Image 1: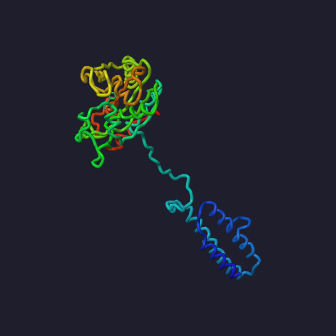
Image 2: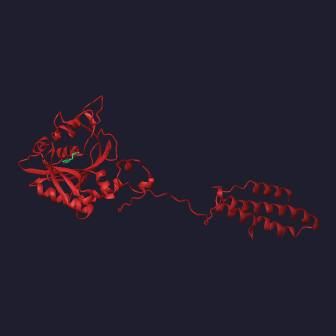
Image 3: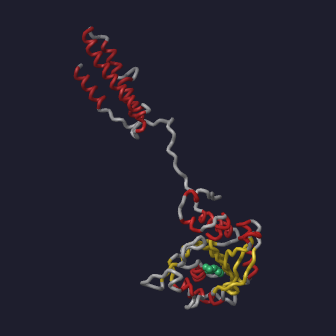
Length: 328
Ligand code: PHE
């Protein structure tokens, strides 16, 4: 009898809690109403003479207490903090913070959707470009200020490599590889050596769109831009102002009217793709013509969300970022 008692004592002491199931098996094994070891021992004890009954009764009672203590330890509220402890469905869950989409990403997705509806295919191009794709093929002359060391980021070791200054380089990449007709949209980061202020930054996002087919005209360009502006702002008044870009002819800048107080705000550049550019990518300008436009996403976003400082987009301040809800 003593041997059995010692064995049981040891087994109870050495019990290790793993989960609810193993604790419950432990309870049933020792205290189960029908076949629990201690329950059976108590029954057995009745056959013993009074002195032995008293003596072993005490021991079995202690063992019973030990088992109960163990169970209590693993189920009591206090010890539930220990992650090894039993699952308590009444404890409030740990909350997981749900992120939100960055306003620039929201606008990017909106633009992709707006242009997808009128058959524009979305592509992306590299942010690290070479001189030819960023400048030469786009008819930007060698002495153009945007090539200047002051105006963009070149690699000292290899001045042929630079961070693209605009997404127009994607026009060249796409047109070289594909034959018209095509309608393409591309959105991505561009870089310029500018001092950071509320209106400018050395890095921002641009959307580039271009459409090449037989008989594409300036009125197609106007319609497309009006469609974009209406989709973004509701009905809005815009005007095309004559301008100059080396890769479009004629070129225009588009202004949008924001009422008497604000007046006209410039939002994008555009034009008919210059035949010289088409020639650089082996497209016959006698057969094909096309238009292109470029829009700064931050600039657009300032107008849509009525934010007045471009820097806030890159501060990663969640008090700002969590105010934006994506409808995707
Ligand atoms: N690439 C021009 C810029 O960055 C914008 C533009 C794109 C103008 C396409 C005309 C046509 O300023």
